[in-house]
Length: 186
Image 1 (tube, helix red, strand yellow):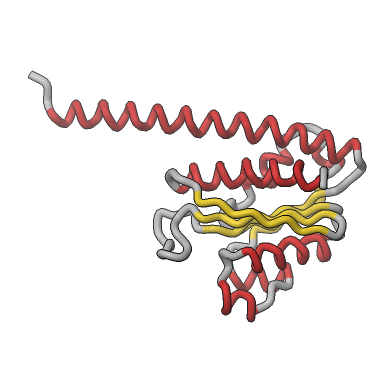
Image 2: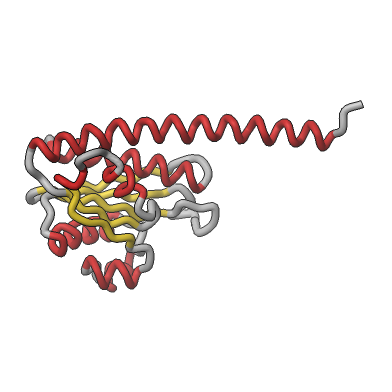
């Protein structure tokens, strides 16, 4: 006779397997776009820097995992706290107290601040709520703002991603790398 604990264990194992396959699918996509980005930056003799909050360095990690990334990667800062955003990127305390860290205004200031302090050609930044806690009605778990700055432009996007914390961070990383490619074409 089958034990109900055995069934539960099988279901969890099956769900974990499906989730791992989803993670891997997104990782492969990120690697593909990071490769394209690095090649493009090298060809155009441009340097990139990242400032990350909710992605915690994932964008930088995928970029520098590409061979020859040292020819186009300048630096990365994980600015998880509001204090770090102000200290390293010059984000205004008024912005943070008025609209919060997870906002278009904040990532815009982060992107401009990163370009200025690192003297790079292009910057990409993230700030969001990866979960599982921390969300609100106005800013739900999964909400991520991404900004890219290149030349005199700053492009800001936002998305509410579904999934667990890892999935939210992976999806945001994918979109951040894609934004870098898109902003180069503007």
